[in-house]
Length: 120
Image 1 (cartoon, helix red, strand yellow):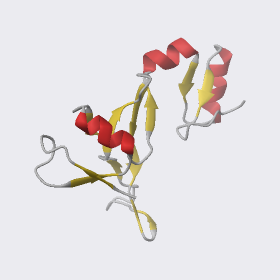
Image 2 (cartoon, one colour):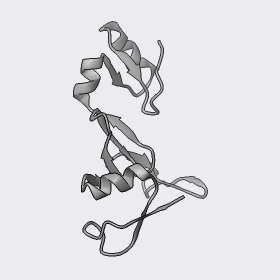
Image 3 (cartoon, one colour):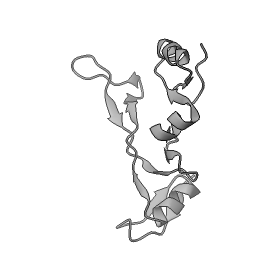
């Protein structure tokens, strides 16, 4: 589903957004390109560079601040909570179980980049 955006100040031509929230943020002029890093994929899976490493790119979808001000989200569903908020709430993003174990030793809960808790 796409929603036609009528914000002529932000777009030189008719633009479509994926969510109502993104249209609202666009009309408030509070949007930017998402900087979330992700692996590039094609119809066959991961794309690799000439050295055999997976290609990583920025998302670049339309992003905006979450309504509660804790971080940001984008039209592709990436969500990031600011470091100050994570610290205040006693949790942080981790890369895997080993990092989760280290944080658990100092009383910090762990969350994977998919938003799900990592229990150790």
